[in-house]
Length: 228
Image (cartoon, rainbow, N blue to C red; front, side, top):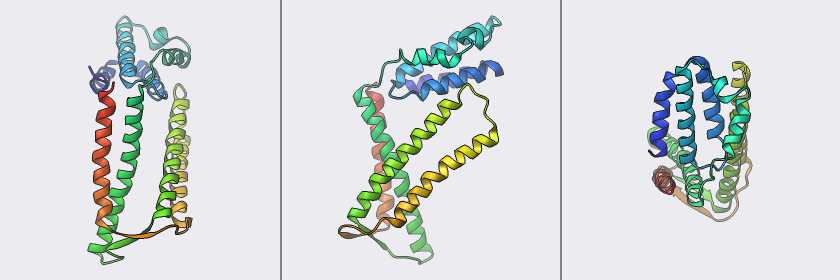
């Protein structure tokens, strides 16, 4: 089975676990999946093996603690060290997929907002003025901000595994983690000066460009999976 099939199979089999065993296994699953630069196929095959092993033990009346030991985090770290890294083609494909999907989402929503604003409420202009230098600066900075946000979120979720976290505290941390990059992004758009040549872009082209990037993202995703 490929990685997608293994994930679906895993989702179904997890329903057979007791509440206690499910908590331990899902922490293990999240911790391992969020490991950097590991082969998705190898990771999902390993997680399936661990789940099957746990289900067999559960049928015999054993707990997840008996299977993974008193320190499941240490157990997971040992396993992660044995998982092969992504091949270069897979890594590039996933990076290109994430980058394309990020900008596709931004452009599609920006295009919808601009078109709705102009064509429905007759507010604004049919074209927007874009300074090439400014667009380049904000694009590069946006990539850095998005990467930092994703990295921090991944690190938080890995840290939270195998811990009991207060829900209010977790909501506050995630809210704060989400608001900071958005604030940085809007500050970037507001304070970056106009640099370079100015060009005029019809507002509908934002939407069109977003759709094109979305299709490119799906292509990159398929290429990444074909390299596994």
